Length: 106
Image (cartoon, rainbow, N blue to C red; front, top):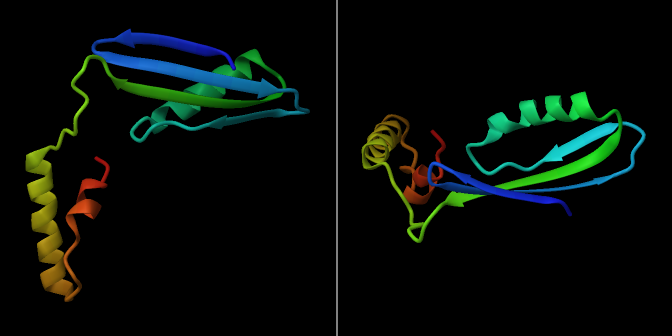
């Protein structure tokens, strides 16, 4: 499986790709959360370079260095908690749990 590695501005990345012969062009791209914008350009580039083939691409990323902990935007979390409490009060539903609020994407 071909692999490429690199880094830029404190972010390390690795891209793994595999392909097999196919009658048409088929691309499967699994991006990490927050990187959905890579799919359209990747499909366009593949279409410009290949007429057929089945491709599976797996980009991975992480912050460079030893410090790879959880980073929480406390202001955004406090806002989400406030909204969740308001919705619970208005609807009578149980308030959202913290794990659900932390899973929200910006």
